[in-house]
Length: 625
Ligand SMILES: Nc1ncnc2c1ncn2[C@@H]1O[C@H](COP(=O)(O)OP(=O)(O)OP(=O)(O)O)[C@@H](O)[C@H]1O
Image (cartoon, rainbow, N blue to C red):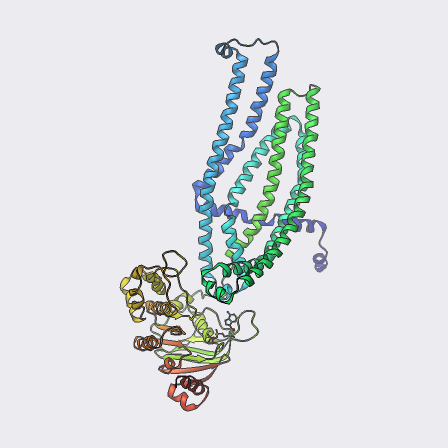
């Protein structure tokens, strides 16, 4: 029975669902209001207060205009024209007309002033709310896992959320504008109802189809934008490649600009075609429904004029009613349109709040185990397997590996053998799909991942080149100590980065990179020295370096390793390198192949074994002979 109900929902349930699908996105509006409220209460209150005050003005103005007309019409009969200004003022009728027009002028001025004040308050509030939302997005992004960032669906959501912040920062102002228009419409409607109740009913009936039509097209527009997110990201990527400084070198050398432009053109063309199609359908349907409203207005106008001609209504009533009706029509139409636009915006808010509601997948224990200080035994990988989300192949599988406390362990292996994946698992950027990793006998998942990461210093091969100062580029290794000049300079010295900094025009205060005008770019090896300094800045017990010297010249590499050995004394160091000249100095070497340990031992042992290591070592050595 239940199943039958689910398969054949009643008409009311279907209607309710359809209505919820259209109006549902409004559920985010209270959250938006809370956001503005939390950002600045007085501005939010001011915005509401100003709009409330302004809402009543149009009805009042129309009513005063009606009084003016009625007074003038009544006074015209048999009144002699005044000879002078004092006569004018002495005539009660004329004085009254003057006062009424003065009142209307005051109302018009007040409305204008209130409007400008509202715009001012709204602009400031929108910027503040936009900033607060960006901060919230950044804070939330920091809580997510690396795997989530690497997920294209999350990237698309984040992209839509970002656009939401950048372009639609002021749905709050719009919402309040709607509230104001709603109140104005209500006051006018009440006044009209007092004269001719059916007029209002006629207006609403004529406009409801237009409203539903707008809602329908807004939904379609959103669906289109949603489906196109991946395309748009790809288009943005093509554009970025085509105009970015980072890629300019290769684009020029390989002559890629035409190819990229063509790919962008195809993507943009598809978007344009779909957009135009929708816009055309929207314009036709919108035009038809809008004419319904116009028809209703002129019908009402005709009736009011006829009634005035037959004496049922005064000339003032005619002025008031036609004015009020015209205003009302504009307002209700604007309201319906605005509401449907808001509904469209609220759908984008779905993305924003959807992203904010994303929870990290890596678990943090409620009562984390105390982190061992110092580490006694080290890390043990027990039959660890990891498969990247959506990947067919296992990056590592059945991996058993020990990293003993205090040793310098080198990981070698061909491209794609899983070395970097091991580092990411060690830093708990991912959790193993199978097996477990122990630290001093406890599962890594028992510790607070943030504490774990503060105890491990990792430099990845694709380290980030921050377009910040040289000092900040080192300080990011322990950002809390960014003002500790001695620590920064010490780290730079150990990583041979001090000589790089010495050559910079502004020394440690020199901005690096090409993004900003005052930036100075470095060579690959110079950047790498700064990245190594970052690891020393961290002063962590475990040091992990993924290809730390790939960009260094032979002399620098030898020196960096000599220092690493000296500095790693008592610390655990994991070193990934394709250069056997560096690897051979490690306490132990582990050879990886297809995500598994193939061999392990000291350099001498492995050479004696005459296995894979010996083969690769011989290959490199021969190249130098
Ligand atoms: N983010 C990712 N998503 C999906 N697959 C990935 C991802 N990162 C790596 N892989 C895959 O996992 C496997 C192991 O990659 P990993 O980066 O650990 O290799 P590596 O030994 O460090 O290689 P290299 O010497 O080239 O740096 C590879 O087959 C790679 O294609």
